[in-house]
Image (cartoon, rainbow, N blue to C red):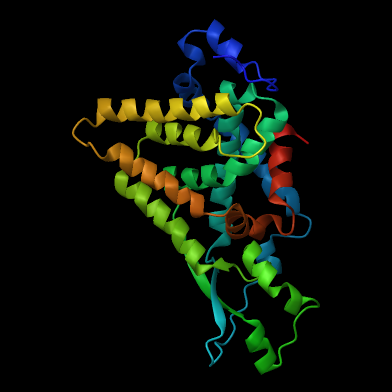
Amino acid sequence: MATPEGCRCRAASVRNNNNNSSSILYSILKSDRVEEEEEEETLHNLLQRTASSGPAWQQEPPRHQQACSCGATRRRGVLRSPQVTCKAASAILVKTLRFVKNVPCFRELPEDEQVVLIRSGWAPLLVLGLAQDRVDFETTETLEPSMLQRILTGEKSSPGTAQSEAAASAAGPSRGGGVSVADIETIKGFLKKCWSVDISTKEYAYLKGAVLFNPDLEGLRCFPYIQSLRREAHQALNEHIRLIHREDTTRFAKLLIALSMLQSISPSVVAQLFFKPIIGSINIEEVLMEMFYGK
């Protein structure tokens, strides 16, 4: 396959010159083997980013507010055990980035294309990792007062709250009030779906490949190549299922349905729920780029 015009990746020529070891099947499965010692070292560095000021869950304990009689509140939730869950999520983030880094097909792409794919894929890949490692979590519901409740109860709000209320709601989770209960239920629904299907390690690897190589993002110069990689991941998954689960004719469709559920999970929600308690106000994308490229 010819490399598309404007794409600087060497992937097409590499794949033509190599044998099966350059296929996405080999690349994805090979990259899914993680070195635990390096994981622990990188995880330690991530968790120490806020060591000087202490974990955010100690700085800003969730405040339970009395429900407004008019019902003008938004249901939100925070982790019940952030120390445990955030550490597990951080370990999976390290695994996820190492998985991506070790996929030769990915590293052959231009760096700016890699950045686009990482920023788009880190959250769904992380949630897939939560499912694979069977990380369950419990949340505690909080009540975030609406602008109407603040007015009726005389509660003071920060400057600009009235003007930014609608925009903040549309943009994602609030800074201190956890995330929407509906968003939490979406994540939990995805995890339960994966666990009910009992996805194997190889199947998770192929699903990760399908998520990572997303050709639907804007500005990709290597769109045809990335599209072919996703197609190969789907094909490899289907072939594996037909070989191992011959009697289950709906399994491939079930896994694709599970993947489609990831599209409704916002990266801002994942960052707010699983990482804000340990990195505070630090931008999660800055952490990702530092961990991946050392920048």
